[in-house]
Length: 113
Length: 115
Image (cartoon, rainbow over all chains, first blue to last red; front, side, top):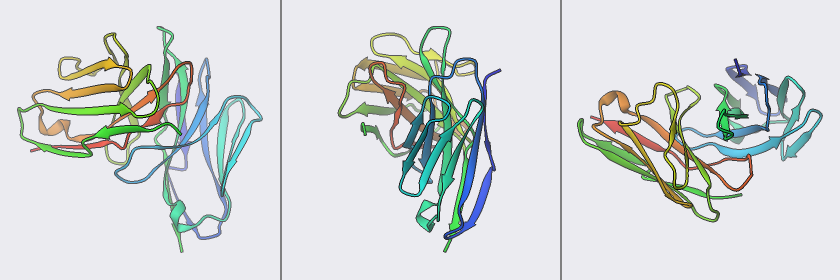
């Protein structure tokens, strides 16, 4: 069964303490892996799309990488404003041919000053 | 990036009444819109997928007569929660894609409280 698993569930960092979030997936037809940031009470904000193993994308202190089994979101020297829940999603193709976004449970990141 | 606007952001309604949530794509034509439900500290659970001009496809366990979805135009989809009950209280989020893109853009979400 296709699924998306994110770890850790929660992560507390000190400001400046770099770390990585993991998203592992088991899908039969990957059509893109996405990272989103979600602040409390808000909808997810798009960060990155990765399509093929070996691909990397960067935005400010964030860098996303992709392998055939998992994706990492690296956070370098985080700041308190990076505190949020980070969601990983994969696009699966339904029997009807539509793209179906499927989300992991997310990693709740808190960065202490 | 593309902008998706969801309205209202918060709504409180009485048990037994219906409430409508709107999702608009502001700067693109959304060929497909998705409706999600999110419980506290949980991930987004897909409720249904709607394509403009056709009936929505509901996920297993989602009552189509309770959660009415209308995607009448390429820029607007609505979710109506009918005969709302307190257990329908949740955070509802829409997203939209366009053309052959696999990227989905999300609305701000709607916090529904049924009292």
